[in-house]
Length: 321
Image (cartoon, rainbow, N blue to C red; front, side, top):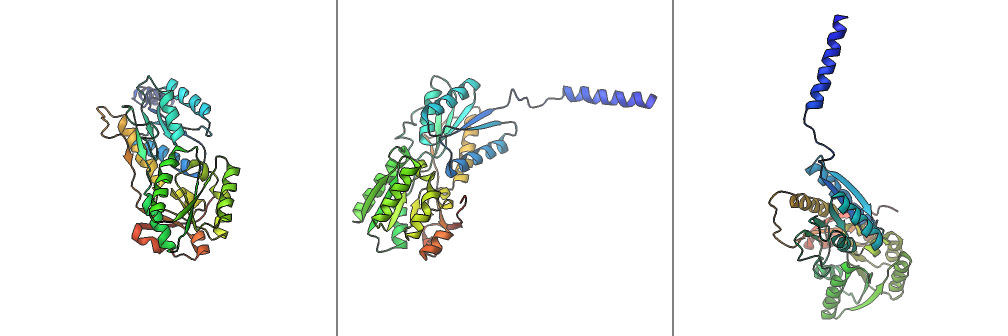
C-alpha cells in the first residue's frame, strides 16, 4: 500500500511539473496562409515546398493552404478570412497576389508572393508590406535553345493565355527576339482547358517548328492533355518551368519550383523578424538549370546534352499520366 501511494505521488508530481513547464502555445504560434491561384503541378509544387520549409524554420508555425480555383471572388474570401485570423499571407500566382494585397489593404499584414514573373506590371511594387520572388524568364536563352535543337527553325508557335499577366512580358520579349532573327511566329491563346487543346491543335495544323509557353498557369493546368499531340507531331514544346516538363513539355531553362518555394518561405520568415527592412522590391530567382523530358527527347531523337552549354542539364520523366 505504501509503495502504491508513493507511485501515485510520483505521478501527480510529474503531472504538476509537466503543467508548469513552458511550452509553445497554439495561440502564440505564427500562422501562415498559402493561397494558390488554382490547382496545378507548378503551384502545388511551390506550395508544398513553402509549407515544408516554414515548418523547418519554425516548428510551431501553423500553415494552411487554400486554392482560389482561379476565381477572384473565392480568392477574396480566402484573403479576408486570413486577415481576420491575423495570418501572414503567401500567395502563388499573379491574380492571387493582387487579390491578397487588396484583401489586406489598410492593415500591416505582410504579403510575400511566390514566383510572379513581372511584379512591377502586376502593381505589386512600391508597397512596404509587400515583397516576394520573381521567376522572370531568360527569353533569349529559350530562343537560343530552339535554334540549338533545330538550326533550320522557321516558325515558332506562341501558346499562352491572354488573361495571364505572367505571360504578357515574356511573350512580348520573345516576339521581339524572333523578329530580330527573322523567324516567323504564330500566336494561339486560350483561357480554358478545352481552348488550350484547340489552340495546341491549331499550332500543329500550322506546322510550326517549335512551341513556346511562358510560366502560364492556364496552359500548365492542361499540359498533360496536349503533350502527346505535340510529341507525336515532332514539335518540341519549350515552357517556363520544370513542372511543365514533368507534365510532358520538352524542355525549360526556367527556375526549379521546389527551390523557388524554399526561397519564398525563407523570405516570408525573414519578413517577420524584428527590425526587418525591405532592401529590394522583390528577389529575382536564378534559373541556371536546363530540364529536359526524356520521353519527349527520345521521340524527337534529341540528346539532352546538346543543351549543356546553357547550364546544368537535368532529365525528368513525364508524371501524372
